[in-house]
Length: 359
Ligand SMILES: Cc1cc2nc3c(=O)[nH]c(=O)nc-3n(C[C@H](O)[C@H](O)[C@H](O)COP(=O)(O)OP(=O)(O)OC[C@H]3O[C@@H](n4cnc5c(N)ncnc54)[C@H](O)[C@@H]3O)c2cc1C
Image (tube, rainbow, N blue to C red):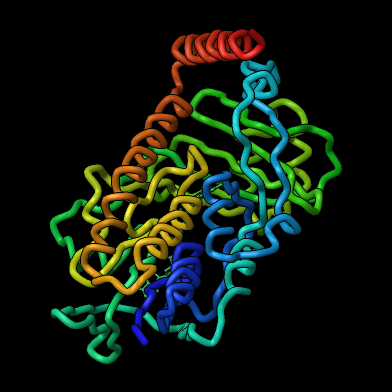
């Protein structure tokens, strides 16, 4: 049986393990954390990623995820700029990250071995296989070790690596009874968004311009957004302060590095970390895994299959990295006049799309 090592057990790594298992590979997953899991936040899963999960045989999404309601974009004062109900846009399902991670892990069969508390520091390859940390060998390595991937750094030492976007993100889950379809609110240099999870709790996220490493917590978010329109103050009040996550937002510069070198494949944030503005980073990792399975299916040689994976996934994710960064740039504008023009243009665009749809 062919052997593979997956480095990293985030959403990308566990999905890659299931994908390889489907192709009949014997898989070892190496994760540096002491146990498997995901952070306490929600995640949007777009239809293309739902289809990829189905393709990989991951079951139970319909019982754990809920379709987002059409919402739209408001100003900090609560005026609707664009009502998405009029736009006919495709909608993602919302799910708790830990539940998504768990559903994928439920598909782990006897062909997958997991080693937690194992940090990959070194890798070497030749024509027949790859050696990790001078002790583990496999015919293929899938590096799903995140935005600061040591594998990517080893393969591409000249590549610049993560760059700071200029803003930080906060996330939380609130237990509050509110009846609001959610959506995003754009202010000046700050945004707030929320959506309902299947159990009725509210997953929210917020962004704010600040220098890298400045940090922030529940009190900072409350200071920044506590006087925004309802139900934002209630959502913040209903969030346990200690459960607020804060992450400075980075992405990878384009051109992205090749996703394949010899017998080593990059997948997920290790290959194409993007800002979260489109909510597509984890979805792309899932789609990478499904693409890898499709190209590895059958008994053909490895090299053309991996080249086909790179040819499919690198251009698609490059576009998302660029689009996501551009959306962030517009969303984080600060100048009062420029923001008013931005909101006016969005409102105008929304009206045009809605009119065209009705015709
Ligand atoms: C605020 C925010 C909101 C987001 N919202 C969404 C959303 O709604 N929808 C969406 O699709 N995406 C979203 N994303 C993006 C998404 O979170 C990421 O794209 C996704 O989690 C990446 O998964 P990954 O498995 O590639 O990497 P990671 O989740 O970073 O996992 C990497 C794993 O590798 C392990 N690891 C790292 N180095 C080593 C090593 N040397 N040895 C062993 N193990 C190692 C780590 O411990 C980790 O478990 C969001 C991101 C942020 C910051």
